[in-house]
Length: 545
Image 1 (cartoon, rainbow, N blue to C red):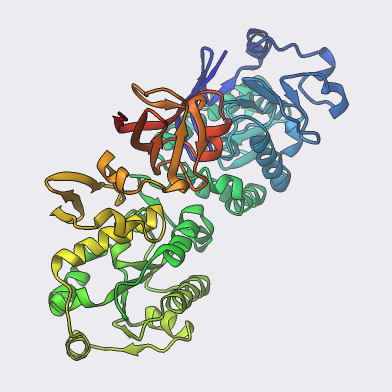
Image 2 (cartoon, rainbow, N blue to C red):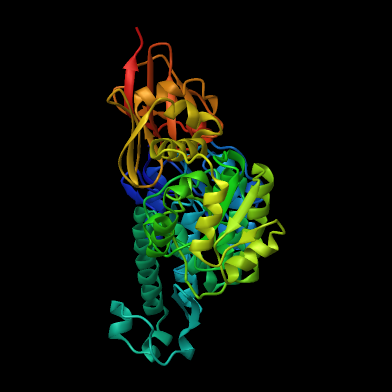
């Protein structure tokens, strides 16, 4: 019985295990039948799955947190998972090790652990099936569960809930009848489950989990460890169309931000010897904002003779040419007019390294307030300008040959290609090309044929002609088995996959019979490990003669 994954948001997924839609919560009266339907027998000694490692050493669908081993199964039950409640490090390390060990299309069942407070994080870490046993045991102890934590019914004067139970009974009636408490707890768990599914479909579960984990220190511990995990880092997609909310300085540790920063430093190629530092704006992309339009109007064509770098939080620094790339065009933050010390330290360190790598001859800045402090903290030589008129005059005296608009647009597309595929690939893609369209929606054309287009997520989408220009790009090439795909490419058909491929990446695929381009649905590691499931959504292909 296959576990079919329908939708993915980083490591969280919506799928179907037999007739069960996941993520799912099992009622305690239906657990036994569910296991029987999947051919799993649970000895009486194991009820409710709380056992020692040696007691399940011969069970193919069971594993213990203290002894995680490889299992070839569609459904894996993590016995004794309830002991991880309240232990953020144990929860994270167990789930990370479990995910590394299992195939990507293995459903994970965590018995007797889920509550309305923690189920969002459990799903975020990659678990799929839960039950109501924690709701049941809590009810017997007079514990009233909410998404914000556990309350004692005896201390409640009114219910912070409008479910059928809480709307029909008094606190005194619940205190004397644990079954009523259980009904509320179960309702609260199911409601939270549906809430989590909504955010998975929106591609914004991380935003929800960031908020939800603040209810308890142990959940926050697990999330912080998640942000430092290389395994989970590779499962965060390279692009999204949803908003990216960064509501605290801790969001600096998110995979999307760390990845963007590292690629800016490692893959950006300077187009000028002059660097111009500018402040960010609320409107994205920045160049469409009122403040940046004033700068653009004042400097005119002189802008094409400098590298513009926007200072911002939480991304730190954003080259003008990468202002459309996810998450630069998609992030939003609470604007207070003040930067905290962590934000300043992060941005200034990135600015310093960016300048050291690119060796600019002169650095100008049109900034004030905390932006100026970030510049000062970077400890690099910067010339500050208080007015656009002064800045324009200096640029006029410094820039001799202003690039044409066409070459400027090609340079932007080249920078985005370098960001996506690696330094140097941009020049191959845009050579002799013409850029058409209205910014930020652009097409890369040669002789009337499309090589690539700039999508709504600010990244390039390749045509097969564009892909042919990038042939030999091993890190983003997938070698498939000897067949010509008629639709999507499934993971069993993948023989080799470039090590840099992430979910959402543009990829090249080929074998002796066909060459094509498409978008990766999973990272390269998962393509090679998964037993089934879509690896690449094919866009275009050509059959080799």
